[in-house]
Image 1 (cartoon, one colour):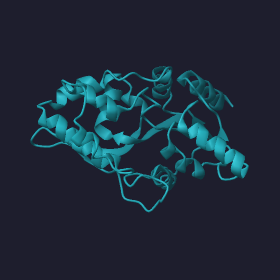
Image 2 (image 1 turned 60 degrees about the vertical axis):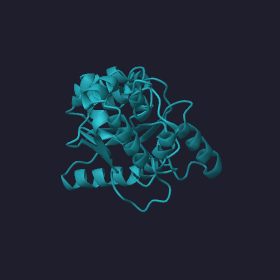
Image 3 (image 1 turned 180 degrees about the vertical axis):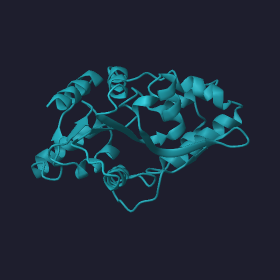
Amino acid sequence: MKILVVFDFDHTVVDDNSDIWVIKCLPSQTLPNSVKGSYRKGHWTEYMGRVMTYIGDQGVIPDSVRSVMETIPFTPGMTDLLTFISENKSSVDCIVISDSNTMFIDWILKGAGLRAAVDQVFSNTASINESGYMELQQHHSHDCGKCPVNMCKRKVLEAYLSEKADGGVEYGQIFYVGDGGNDLCPTFCLREHDAVMPRKGFTLEKLLARLNVQEGNSSVGAKVIAWSSGAEILQELKASLQS
């Protein structure tokens, strides 16, 4: 049975927030207060739509945005991990579930020559319109009260697993690798032989620790393995493949 590796993207695969990094393509490398102050909690994708409209208004073309996005640093050890995954596709499937957008993720992975590692990207849909502006649409609608309006990562993961099961694919083990608060919800559908891998010192690790104290870890069945480098994830993956 194959292994599935599920990655968040920002502060997980890459060592920054891609939605913030894009501001570097502006001559001033900053946003006006009228744009900055327009964010509403839980409505990040709508906010990023306004950011990309402002970037387009400044005459920044998509190729320039792409060039800037390709300079975002990868988290230590991640390029080696993704290279290993791309070389072991007969044993490992890999998906990204991210609150960024499809275009940024594709640009960044392709720029690093790592797109082949990832079988599918689930994120907010991005496209370039006829005026040369990037447009964003939220990934889906959902009724989960714990997650941002544009994406419940648990529902994305459950739908993916259901579709694969319908096609006859069952995963022997799932590794869920993330860092943020919106990575907690999908951990609730993992099994006891799966692994949730929070980045050390980030929000997901703290939330899981709090659950462990409050509930005896009953709500998260998977084992928790914290990491600070992709090398640690690669070590766990190799051990699982050899067992």
